[in-house]
Image (tube, rainbow, N blue to C red; front, side):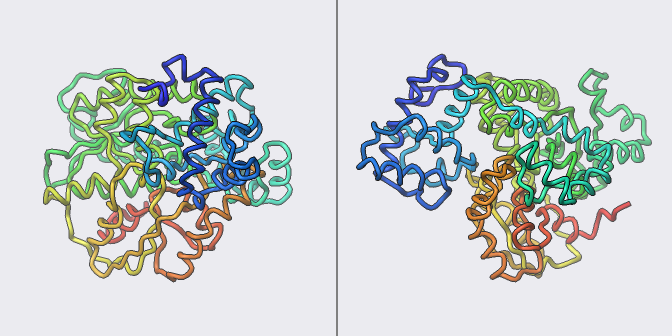
Length: 455
């Protein structure tokens, strides 16, 4: 890491004066480029203020710098998607990392607000609210409760919230395995290995009759969203993977840490990253590939864990992680993905999430959906404007809908049979603005296979 792009392990990362100097350097380059003027509200606010100061970046005050930081959603589109000055360019600009650094330094100076701590503690919220899911879901749809939530928590009264499920995905996965594990080897949850503390908390799957493939063992990093709100995505992922002869395991895991990192709570993000790396490494050693259906999680595991931890173990996890549709397209490239589809996909409006674009994976989900006969896919590449907990907040919710307007308009213009996105939060935002049900590509694939009837 250079001094311009330090890691949290370097003292200069936390130096407030060094941070301010770097902000001014980057803002000066940005105001001379302005390629990102229409991506979000952070850049227009920056450019407008610099123009008011006759282009003199040195005259920006602390409030001006903080305002730009507060308007950043951490979608990352401005970084390695749009910016022409990212490394190895001599300017060495990584605007998303600069914003993370600014939020982290601010949080260290002022503390993390109780609202940010609460909203970013997704595991705790999920475990609590899923136990009372019917009541919680009903209450959060009532106006009085939403007014109270806005007053107490600062969560906008009109923000559509993801529902909580009664039966979490880990519970579904365990009951599924217990129903299938009839052979002693399956019951042991391993391939000839003795029990370990990690293994006792995990449940490995059973390969389908199609037989094993060189990449046929997957450790699913399901995500807190799937675990507590969108369990059907996890179920669909297992159905499709097993249909293709892939053995699926569910290691013990925590939230990937993206919500904590996005509010500048790097110590919490580091703790979660450290725990997940320790939990996933044994599975990698046993030949499993880490696969996740959520773009923010794959981004964290592949890109942010090495940044946060700076360890060989974190890099090992990063190197062995794939997005779910990326993994399935690799199976297709290897000639082993089953194409015994029985239902057409129809016309699909596919939203490509920002955190997949940041990983530069191409159009794997689109290409996967296009394998289904009778399917036409229209790709929508604009940001939905949701971006984690940012758009939940009353001060940013209206801005989030403004940012997502390009996506909403294109969905409505397409008039598709189905709307899908790899990101369930983006899907939640699109559903709020358009009234359309939004699914995940893996659910479309399962339906096309004609498998996985709900029990």
